[in-house]
Image (tube, rainbow, N blue to C red; front, side, top):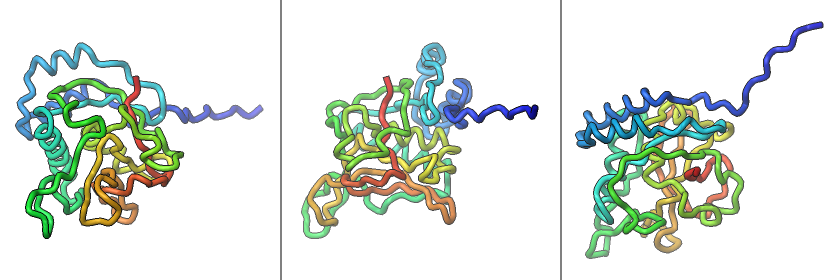
Length: 230
């Protein structure tokens, strides 16, 4: 009788990182970006790390927020996008729109970005989270599936922390990602205010990672709308 080969574990997350590696990545970001996260916080994270979650696209990651309220939302977003730029270099591109800028024929800067949960929910914190990247791929729209546990800035922490995943986005086993916990405003586009959602995609032709925004009606199953897992 011919011996059978062991079955491939389809539930194994090939991007799993040990706690020590994740803390080392955070230390590097803290030093290089001058975030001023104190050593006591690192010690607390080392003592409180949850187990790696079950599921092929479940991840242990961080929530890292700076500042409070409206200013904190902007500061946190820009800090993590800058970190992505610094670690990915020329392979990363972001939209041309800035968060607060003047639009032709308007006197005041336009508010571009806000939390779905409200900017008053934004508080400075560094903590562990568990996320599910495979959530909400089958949907009628982003609006239909987004909610209080949808990822916002947490998604952009994930991008610089798990570069291997981003470099393997193929829209099949590994989906592109919508930050459904954010609302994005592009008044230059038709359709009304706050109709867009930030997303992370990868060009399969050259491997470039793109930070963009698409309509909240998007139902493309090649993208997920990740959420926090309890």
